[in-house]
Image 1 (spheres, rainbow, N blue to C red):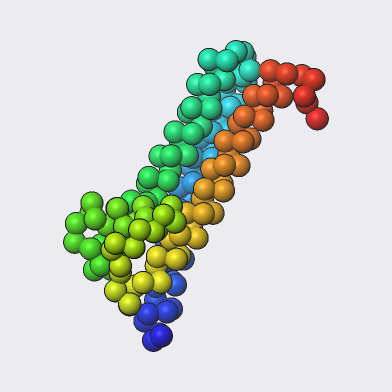
Image 2: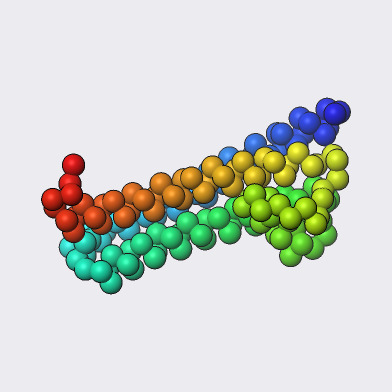
Length: 150
């Protein structure tokens, strides 16, 4: 592989990953503020429907972050000249990010390394989302059922 096909995509991909970390941190911070607010108002653990609403919002914040991150990668693919239309770039990005990888669209050799980088990014961000949602659920369980506290 040449310098361009290895190091330039690595640098560009690393910058995209850094941006997705910032986006996901925003979702994480929003969830923390939501849980703190609901606790302060006495809503945390108040009942099934209230708890369901909190879990729903936590999950939607995570989903929104993922969709934004897929869009960022799609814009990067367009900027690198791989795709002309955002819809196709977004589709390809979603295939990489979720590691579904149909393989029906393949990037040029010069930028192909971005695919695995985005897949790793998607795996890491999915892990962060799982931890974030788990933390919300754990807080709800501990608040609602004092006998389950540590």
